[in-house]
Structures are given as structure tokens and as C-alpha cells.
Length: 217
Image (cartoon, rainbow, N blue to C red; front, side, top):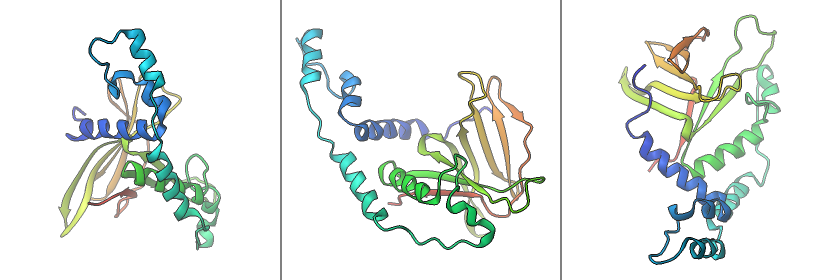
């Protein structure tokens, strides 16, 4: 449990933060102060504050993103689902969002940040008959560590660590979901301070329950 983040995570996280700040717009950038608008030499703090508040930022990125997502979602998608999972049309995610909302969120994340993860959770033993699976979503910042290897002649994701939100945990304590291929996909949950495995059961799968949506160069 000593290795938490991928070797490129910190560099990518800095890029993600900048992208989100730019999309958030003028107020976010002004609040960041000298991070985006350096204080000119010889300018006092009072002058600099007026300088920042008097500056303007044209929201090209946010408007472009909104337009691109809107052009894709202008017409309602055609969704054909078997009866077994028809309920996912209106409640597809862990938060209860519909497939239409999931599609829009995925488009926005992939077009702006370039990466978005979705994990399909199957009903556990003892669940009500006819229970549909649901999709847990993870933004790029929550994708902490990953590893791909050649398995059986195919490039497969063999390790994935995701940060999970859990309001029941104390402030500052994190919860991670770890998926590994050993040789089938199995999952484990860990909480911090110190890192301990939480008693959770996961279904073993022959294929990954993960969809990593990203823009390929």
C-alpha cells in the first residue's frame, strides 16, 4: 500500500486544475491572483488588487465546450435497452442520474479534461429480483493509479486505483477502490490512516467493469 499515485499523476493533476479554472471563468481566475496574473514589479498590493479586479477574461473555453456538448445532445439519443436493465434509462448512476445526464456529463468531461472513468456495479447477492446494475463515475482527478499489460495477446488494464467519495468518513480520511487482474478482475476498498482494507465483497469478472473514456492523440 505504499504506492498510491501514478508517476504522471501530479503533472496531469496540475493540468486538470488549470483547465477547470479556465472553464470556471473570470471569478475563479481572479481569485487565484498571481497564479495567472503576475504582479508587475513596483506595483503595490492595493494597486495590484485594483489591477486584478479591473482585468477581464473572455470565456471562450466555457462557451466552446457548452456549444460542443449542445451540438451532440441537441437531439435525444436513441437508447435500446433489454427489459432486464430498462430501469437504467431513468436511473443509471449511483447518484440516480439518467442515461441522458450521464451522456452529457461524460461528453463534458472528455471534451474538456480528456478523461473520465465509469465502473459498472452489478447487483450483489441478496439484492431484490430484477435489480439493475448502476454506473459509478470518476473524474480524471479521481483516477489515481493505473497499469496496462499484455495479457493473452491483448493490452489490458491490470491495475486501477480510484478515489471514492464517502461522506461517512472523517474529514481528511480517503477511501480508494482498487481493481486488479489476478487473473480475473477483483475489487478491494481501502480507507486511509493507516491504509486498511475494508470488508467488502466484489463479483469476480472475466472482463474489466471499467470504461475509461479518453481522447486519443
